[in-house]
Length: 410
Image 1 (cartoon, one colour):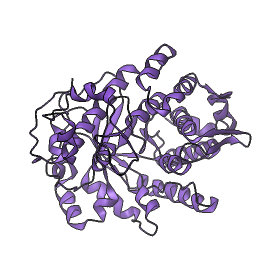
Image 2 (cartoon, rainbow, N blue to C red):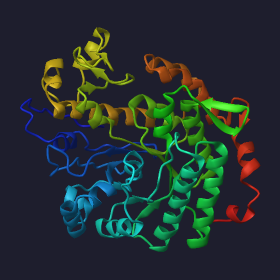
Image 3 (cartoon, rainbow, N blue to C red):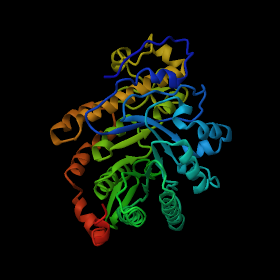
């Protein structure tokens, strides 16, 4: 169970301190994972970051951000990452590839990241990857894929004292499968073993670019899916390609999206949404997208409706008093509230999976205000191995199973 706490409204605690109060004794019966993304040194300052007791809920930090902050890096390399953060929970360190995509010309050397991983000692370390850009040319995206695979080879050769997470990138089934084959070939050559974890990346820019409406080619010219369906199908496909690995889907951690991503086959997701939404003045409630507490000039989000007022007031996140006025004036308190909603959503999903057909109506009711609700039947199809007249196993066989050596990897 999640413990609750009472927090004054004087806003003296950092968001990491107030979030830490609700993450005690968090355990679940299903082996899923959730990661709270956070800057390494946010304002208010992070001295005491969230302290988790669950092995399934951890912290995600960005390696590139640390490298770009020499003073902080020096402290982390001297103390170790967990000692710097003053936590005992699992920590995943991302390489920062998404930063390179957003800010052209910014990059880090793989050797530099290897050194940071070895000295910081995160529990999980993500390969230095270069996510794809849906607007880029084929040659540019091909270069990104090749660079990521080259980095994977170098990082496996380095024998890191942590669990390395390779990342699959592709905006078609064919590219995902071919890329997965190359990852397994690299693992066979350098370790003769199977990756314990596998990541799926490049999904967030695809969704943002398409805004959910652009059709994405899957594995033939006459077969297309819209962006959300492609992301869910890609998740299911990668899980089938790496059945022995834990699958982490990067950056798709909205509370409503989480339901369907886990349902499609993800074992793990991360989110910075609990902070970002709070920074934009928004909160979340179970089964709802984010809401403003009061009308704002920026009308990008709905205002919390009166029909959800009772649920909002009864929230046990620990903010006291739990009123619109109190949360509206404080980023820290909104962050606490949102983190509590994310964590409870994670616990609810663990208890609900797998999304069998008998749970279909229950999930539809729960997500009744979400535009993603219409994809629930699609998730059920993915769980059964079929969708839109596709058979996932047949797709894999078409492009993948000819390579008998790969299938012999331990």
